[in-house]
Image (tube, rainbow, N blue to C red; front, side):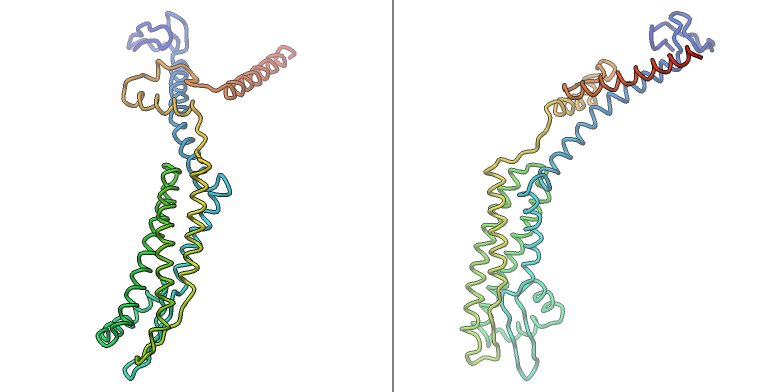
Length: 290
């Protein structure tokens, strides 16, 4: 074992708390070294957390555009539940209502309505084709919305790339909404002519189009304004240095404390040290009076 201050060898049977060479208290010197190492390690590792926190804030809440993006995403989820069209079937075998929206499609699958209509597809060639076309378009709109949602969740990784992905997907989704609206408008005009199906147009396509167009505009603004997280250069340096410390290229013992320091951080540190020194002097002054 060696003295943490002067490096003198301490014999195994030497139980003295102080080094015989320099007189330092070995226990407190070791604790000071450990605390210094912990302080350096915390400084380097906490920088990565601050960078991540800044990216998350910038992507989701640091600005009106980012907040509106989250609101628009919630609206997009709700819009898919608005019926694009509604079909009524009235036969001797069954009577059913099928709504072309997220909830209506789910209900049709769960209660067997879609299966019953599917069995009559041969006698309803035109109606079945339009229904399947609208159903497919709604599924594609849902998938585009899912892609937008995933891009939003991952936007803290790179807000600009995610904004570009969201913009493209929302434009594609809006175009699909136009096609779905066209099909839903055609359905009432072509259904009910010699068949037992009657259809009416819903506003789901229009609502989804407006919401997706709004999302496209918001992400265009993110790209145009070049919104980026405000990351301090000193934190980037800390994260790079932390990787080198973890890989063994650099030892914590060779680094100063603080490792890096901005002028603002230095000013705060000096103010704390001055305050601590003043308290010590005040305490010493009180002891001398006694």
